Image (cartoon, rainbow, N blue to C red; front, side):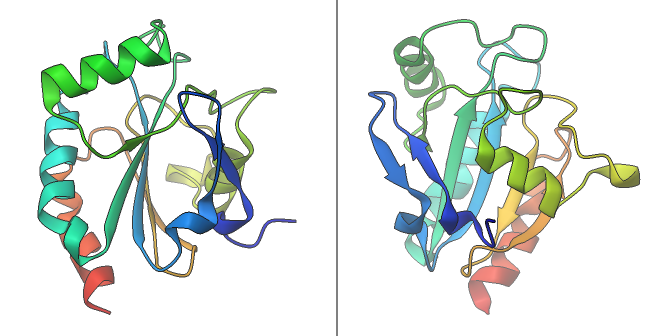
Length: 162
């Protein structure tokens, strides 16, 4: 049974396995993304946060997901190119996953359980749900898709200053 996110592995666009242990001692912001969503412009704000705070210990990790309105139907290669060309994304983007249902990625099953949504709901409601993780791999908070990257910066800074 997983105790922290460091108990999980993720896959790159080339299907290489990366242990989340790689991110130990970092503050993480994990986001399920989509390239054809009304919230997609948040990629610009996420990249700005990453550029400002990466040297202080922040890592942002995107997981493309096509479960909500089929808003990320392209291949992972096309998604990554879109993110780079249109939003200058340099933070880590892993392979496409599912976040809900029987094929949900185990990391997201853990995140949903460790930080339920409003009224205790576990399911992710839409693209750009964000999970803030501390340096020990513990989930600190879930942020709704409408929460802009700028609006959660204070919570990130609090962890970076600890």
